[in-house]
Image 1 (cartoon, rainbow, N blue to C red):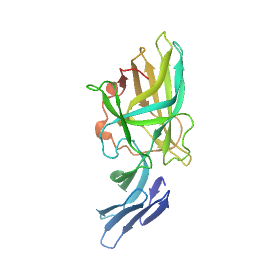
Image 2 (image 1 turned 90 degrees about the vertical axis):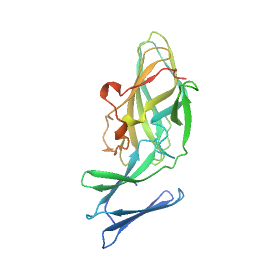
Image 3 (image 1 turned 45 degrees about the horizontal axis):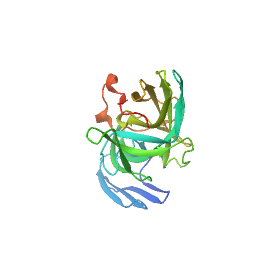
Image 4 (image 1 turned 60 degrees about the horizontal axis):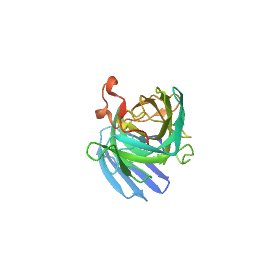
Length: 233
């Protein structure tokens, strides 16, 4: 499903149909139907645009409630003092459909084959609402459902640290995709038993880079990390 397409487009996959047509007046119609409901839109453009379908940051549905993503590991990870390692887990996939003209993109639709759940990180009064996802190393093999997140973890403390959940700022998320998978990377530095710095980083492996939806939320480099202050369990 992912890729860049010419118009007209008639794509059927995973129980949904996407149809994009253009008439002689320059009016383009977009339609999506199937198991996820129906969407219909009209696009007016003098030139014949293209359609790009790609994974996007998974915090847009059912509407943009939060920019934070909480991943709960299905198995707790125990990290030794002054040690570091890699945790492979997953994240939910949301799919954006863009109309593209040269290097300009406009979102016309976003949908997902996953159910949206939300959770609170921290206390009731000052906690942060997060998109919630539970995962582990055994990912769903369908790249329309779940992407792979490689998390590099470094323990700067002299204690054993138990890690069960990770909170990330999705406005900094960098996603790449290929025929085989949807992929992202992040890193966590543990500063104490309850405090850690978590940030996304540019994926090291190859693939096509997704279009970012949350550009307006991107902050300066020194603020790009998220501070987990309420622990990792």
